[in-house]
Length: 244
Image (cartoon, rainbow, N blue to C red):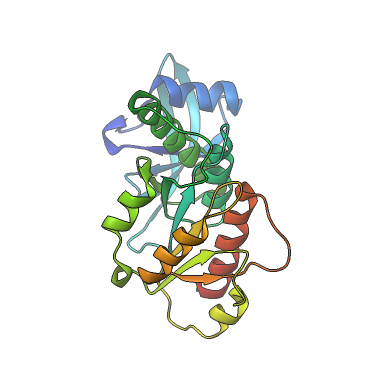
C-alpha cells in the first residue's frame, strides 16, 4: 500500500493527512493501526512506516526504513488520447499509468463524441489526476503521470514539436506498417509519444496532418481494439521494448 504525500505533511513521526488521503487509507484501503504503509515524499523518497495511532487527520507513524531516488524512469511515454465517450478516459488513465505512461494529453478530435464546457473540463481534469495518482499508488510507482487539460486536435498540433521525442507514433487501422517492425528497428529510445483515436478512430485527414507533423502511423495488428484498451496495449509494447 502506497500514498503520495508532501514533505510539509510530515513532522517527525506525525503525518497530517488531507481529508481525501484519510478516506483513501482508512475507508477505501481499510488500513488499521499496526499496518505498514509506504509513503512517497515529494516524488524523491519512499519511506516504509507502521501506523501507530490515528486521531482525526493526524496519524502517528514509526518509520521502518527509507529509500532515496535520484533518477527517473529510463523511458518517458506521452499518450495523446482522443477523449472517449462517458467516463472511459478514467479507465484509460488507470490502465496506462500501470503500463508506465508518464504524461497524458486528452484531446478532442473530429469523431470525438463527448465535449466539455470550461467548467466540466476543469472538473474532469481534477478527477483524472486523482485517478492517475490512485493507479500510481496501487502500482507502487515513484511518480504520478501528469495529466494535461483537454485541448482540441488543432491546439495539440500547433504546440507539437516532434524534435522533443525520439519516437512519435499514431495507431491507425489502415496503416500497413506493424508496431513490431518499427520497434525492432529503433534503439536508444528514451522519449516516445503515442496517439490513440476515439471510438470510430481518427479521420484520414487527421492522420495525414499527424504524419506531416512527424508522427508515423503504425498498425497494432489485425484486431480492432476498443479505444480504452488500445492505449494500454500500445504503451505496454513500447515499454517492453525500451525499458531497461
